[in-house]
Amino acid sequence: MDLITRENPARVAEIVGSVPVTDPAAVDAAVRRADDAFRGWSVLPVAERVAALRHGADTVAARLEELAPLLARESGKPLADSRGEIGFAVAFLRWVCDEAPAVLAATEIDDDAGRLVVRRKPYGVVGCVTPWNAPVILAMLKLGPALAAGNTVVLKPSPLAPLTITEVAAALPAVQVIHGGAETGRALAGHPLVRKVAFTGGDAAGREIAATAGAMVTPAVLELGGNDPAVFLPDFALSDADYERLVMASFATAGQVCMAAKRLYVPRARTAEFTEAYLAAAERVLVVGDPLDPEVTMGPVISAAAAARIGALVAGAAGGTATPLGRSAPGHDPASGYFVTPYLVTGLDDHAPLVAQEQFGPAVPLLTYDTEEEVLVRADAGELGLAASVWSADEERAFALAGRLGAGFVFVNTHNRTGMSLRAPFGGVKRSGYGREYGREGLLEYVQSAAVHLPAAFRPGGPGMAPGAYPG
Ligand code: NAD
Image (cartoon, rainbow, N blue to C red; front, side, top):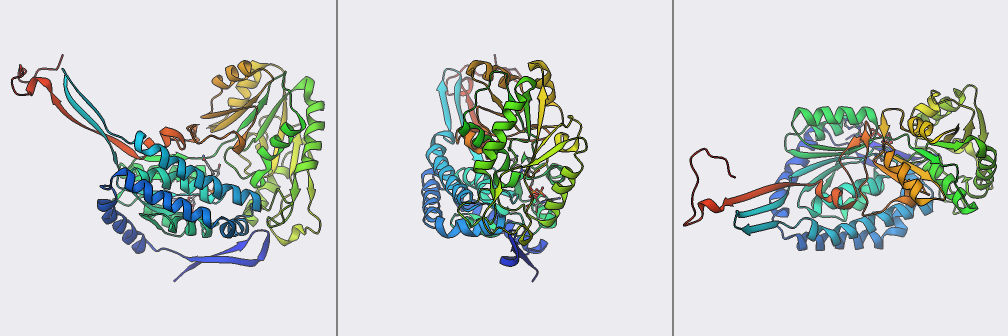
């Protein structure tokens, strides 16, 4: 049996664990088992499903201190972040349990026009394909709503971070985990018994998954990349703590976050002041080193290939000035793993690859602008539209610009995870994908409306209707 062996990206000589590769025949068997299980799981009252999921949430919460170091060691995410991600996934699952009974309830109207029942029915087997950068929460955003709604799930996590999510999923009912890379993902997304596909990942895989699912007329939710602008209006007023939060909005998880602040647009007249405060904040909060060191806030990137790709983006930032940020933890040896120096890059134009592409790594460009209309156009340029942020001392002004930006989610006076809300729908516009996670919308993603209707005209004693007539 083939194995996926995962090394610690901070200490590449250390093997964290391995999982067996699921071959296509075993993918088929897993989907068939999920389809069988759907018959029992989907007919349980929602309260019973929710009770089982609450138990799963408690089980994961009880194992937090054991699972967080595993996540840190397989993903390179600092220990506090790893603890935070698992804790947030538990909080999200509990939120789903609280909300699901009301959101999923059938509606019934019985009046002079007749009787109409609209049920929210699960699809069947949901095939989930997820990335490595937040492997627990990005899977839970699919598992929680899909399972609460009565679907069963086959989950294929990324081969670059398969270990912690396998443990988490084992605590939940009606889920099977399969392992592998693109081939396993293809077999899952194209399986005829998969009734909905949920994907988070990059553009290339997303397009292929959409095509594979489309060929089967299988609906999909796609959460793809972003190149998120942070726009500082001329009246922005940032405290030291705001600057520190802003730095981590770009460099948490070494910049490998779909909704990280990836382009900073600063008014020309305030650029010097902004840059000075930003560099000072980075010196205070950005500490590079081993993710298990409690002082560390930025670990390695996920792989040697990612380190090389980001290195080339920074090296190719011709005409710009790359200023290294933050500091190293005492005793840190960058050669032990896939470490990349974090940079603030100034002096680029909007066509530079570091600005025009999603960098997905620890190098952020600072760009200057002159007018609000100009920055709106520049922030919205490109094919991606996941998140953005607007920073202003005037809340109304910030909300006005935020409403005009072409992004699925706009943060105000913060960016990235500090701006998230369990109740706020999250997802992209343009090529950042379709469908939503979080919030009521994220639950409704996993049900289809099914109507049962008796027109009043055909009730006993009703007036009837001429054959072929349209109702009035
Ligand atoms: P990826 O697209 O390489 O892989 C994602 C998953 O898809 C993995 O499980 C992978 O094995 C699988 N896969 C790859 N090719 C496939 C194919 N052809 N068919 C089926 N499955 C396939 O992405 P990644 O490198 O793991 O993650 C980085 C990307 O994810 C970035 O672009 C990032 O912006 C995006 N992302 C988006 C969100 C969001 O919510 N919008 C969140 C996190 C990450």
